[in-house]
Length: 93
Image 1 (cartoon, rainbow, N blue to C red):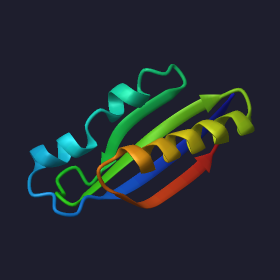
Image 2 (image 1 turned 180 degrees about the vertical axis):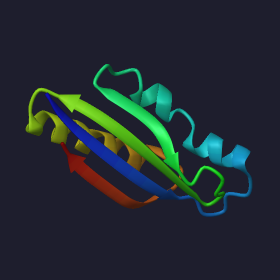
Image 3 (image 1 turned 180 degrees about the horizontal axis):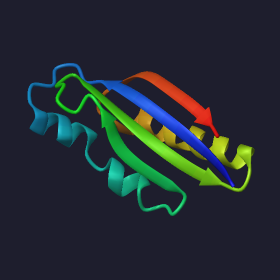
Image 4 (image 1 turned 90 degrees about the vertical axis):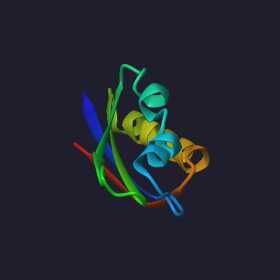
């Protein structure tokens, strides 16, 4: 069993309230947390209006499988979030 940790930071230009931030980042738990191989949480910048940080923990039988799942999550986030990815950090354990 291999574990991957993907931490992504987003810039949310023009965001004026925490409610708007939650709406713009909403649905990440539902989109990714349903998979039995992925855990997701908002891991930082909770009170910042213009920045959001999310961490995804991915489990797989092989390193290539974990890398592939991390790449898929990263690609989907870059296309599906109303914000700009400013940092993506991957770590394989």
